[in-house]
Amino acid sequence: MTHPTTSPTVADHLAAFAAAPDERLEEEFLRLAGTVWAADGPVDGAADHTPALVAALEGADARHAGHLAVLLGLLAESEYRDHPAGDGPVRTAVHQGLDHYLGLLTHSGPGTPLTTALLYLLAHFPEDRARILTAASVEELLLDEHDLTRLERALRALDPDDPDLGRCWPSPAAWNLNDDERGFDKESIKALSSEQITANWDNDTRTVLAYAGMKAYWAVRHGAAAETSYPAPGAPSADEAGELGPQSFARHADALRCPSCDGHLDYTDGVRCPSCATAFPLAQGLLDLSRGATGSQASEQDDTADLLQKLAAMPSMGVYYETVLRPAFLRIAGMNWDDAVTPADEDAYLLAHTRPVDGPVLDLCAGAGRWTAVLEQAVGTERLIAQDLGLPMLTALRRALPEVPAIVASALTLPYGDATFGAVNCWNALQAFPEQADIAIAEIGRVLKPGGTFTLLTFRWADDPVDRYFQGSHFFPSRPAGMLLFELDEIRKWLTDAGLTVREQSGTGSFVFITAERTA
Image 1 (spheres, rainbow, N blue to C red):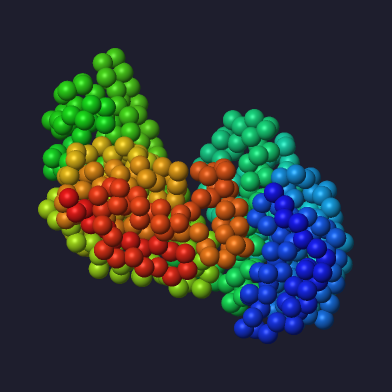
Image 2 (tube, rainbow, N blue to C red; image 1 turned 135 degrees about the horizontal axis):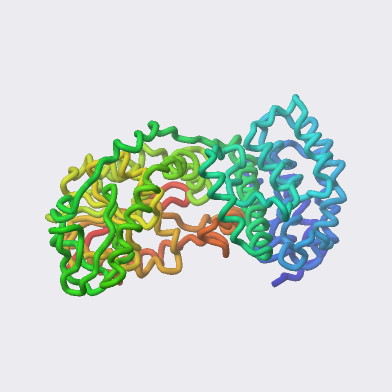
């Protein structure tokens, strides 16, 4: 979809932008950007106007030049769907200014917003990879390893014989895999077709560009962007997680149900459903209610339990998520480039708003257990159940919280009876299944007792259209179509439909903190 415009309009907006004082710079930039760029493609005639944008860099101060560099980067990638080879007229016009961009980079200074914006712009020209990397590697720029490896990855061509997929966001330098994890990656990649490899490579590239672009856009508006990680204590050794037997789950027998027939479970000899003769794997304190076996399949349970034991010996990915990947996700989904929301802020919210009625408390989509630990402080171990569908995450949780039973199950079909929980928490997870978020919220409403509370952290679309574009241009393995976030109105509607009443709503940037109560 394109939007017609005329040269005088673009020229007028460019002149207004060039003359804009600081207090009007953002407004004039968005007006200028809207005359040549849209999230779904370049505006008609954008290629004709691009030389004027390049020329406007000459003599511009650092803030104006940084904004222009971001806009030129957006234009360079805006034709991707129609010209995946990068041979479209708009990108070609942007590329004509390469010498100028490299000259600006030479004098832009270490860690400045202009440097960050120029790196994003230059990342769109892989045909000039050697020249760009040489310019970016000069000692005077002092690029950190994250910026440099992002640039290197964006400029790299796919090697079909040795494809390096994933592990590039938020930067290749952020990943420190052990041999087992690298081996797992390589085996997974071998199973992909050539078409799947190409699609994953392209999605990785666009995700790296989106992160670099969003960082640059934040920096030119607000100053240097933070890339904070939050180190966690080292994971305990394999035998410290401990074994929780059936009785640890039996204390929640009134809530737990068979996912096959909704019958009550028996905990006398393992975990089984007497009604439909289904047995469920239990190992290392992980009860798998995502599947079961009946009759002749029951012998396969030992194999499944053995698999859970082996996975329990590899906890590092869950811990890595909490310390590195999650903070990076909050930067793009929550606009948290200034660390306005810290883990301590999240802890305080949960401690202040978790007020359960009688019954167990569910930490839904618990991940590696960072916020399960906060709930444990609030309600005590005996009331707490953790649930997630990701075994590596739950493995890390079990090591961190060895007395908390964990259940493997989907958030869309909760294996619990109606009105059985005193509180449910779902923290930083709803956006992982955005098309089915209404189903998950309906399930939460179903299992909550009247008066029970639901605490939620998720994210809405940013107000700024450029930020929204960068948010949606992140293509994670779980979201190959691009990231989807929410509008506040739709979240509130889903809560109302589930019988929940919002008692508190807050959040800076595009964070959404909500506490809701089951009212009937």
